[in-house]
Amino acid sequence: MTQAIPDDLWRDFPRTATEFEARFATEEDCRAYWMAARWGGEPACARCNSTRVWTIREGTTFECADCGHQTSLTSGTLLEKTRKPLKMWFRAIFEISTRRTGISAKDLQRIMGFGSYKTAWSWLHKLRAAMVRSDSEPLGPFVQMDEALVGGKGGPNKELVLVAAEANGRVRLAHAESNDEGTLKRFADGQIAAKAQVVTDGHAGYNSESLGKRTHEAIVQTKAERRENDAVQSCHWTISLLKRWLIGTHAGAVRPKHLQAYLDEFAFRHNRRKTIGVSRIAARVIESLVAKPPRTMRQIIDATTRCRWFASTHVAPA
Ligand SMILES: [Zn+2]
Image 1 (cartoon, rainbow, N blue to C red):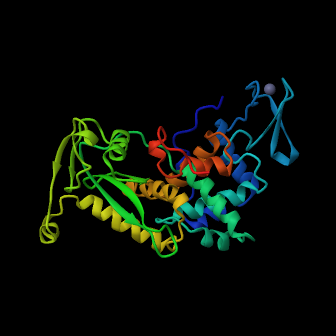
Image 2: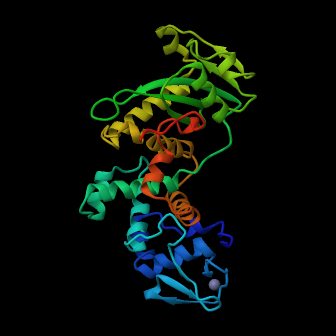
Image 3: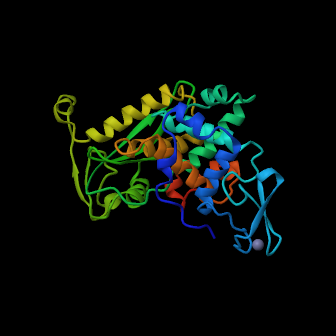
């Protein structure tokens, strides 16, 4: 059982590099923050929940005075079994949080001084899994839907992405195999409020089968009309930002297998673009790292493979 996490822990997270260096100068600084996030500052035994514990193994582990169980700082969290100091993880978290558009594995490798690209890549995947929280509130009340092909240039070879966007609001993105009625229905049912009003282009897959009882307006526009007043403007903006982000931050080097993880990160940042600062993102990543159970890289990747929204019918590729 974890204790309540202080709501305002994020306020204590530095916003600039100078503040960061000062606040998290030592491993102990990072451990103290980690313990505040995980146990409200008072570590408890993972087996019996007793808080009568003492520190062993240079502060990385607690032994319970009541039952003798040993609880490491990271056991039972997403960082379980990490061999790297928390200070390095905090640094990486700071780096991904301070950049409005995120960071590539290559840049992270350089900043952290990792010997291999693969290490940087797997750290990013882990942090991405922590950052992206399922955001279950469905979109509404006015939602546009569209599809786009993204990729090429060394990355995914034109992969299909379904887009749902509130006017100037939140977006959801799904890497899909098809834009047929059934697929669109699963996407809409998972992401769009049942009473939403939906606007689409004239694609035949958007119909009463796929959209159910939602009010639906299909607007067929010429190029000139679209320039004047684009009916699915929010979708088109999202798609163009997404494409720029995939090329700009990730050099187009996203493999189809991982595209959904990137779409999730994009949507997470996009949906919080007006409200969230460095400290909030970074603090949220840490809260999430302590709160989520350990997962292997394989599990992290499988969880974001294509058609995650459609888990009921989708068989993950081997
Ligand atoms: Zn115990």
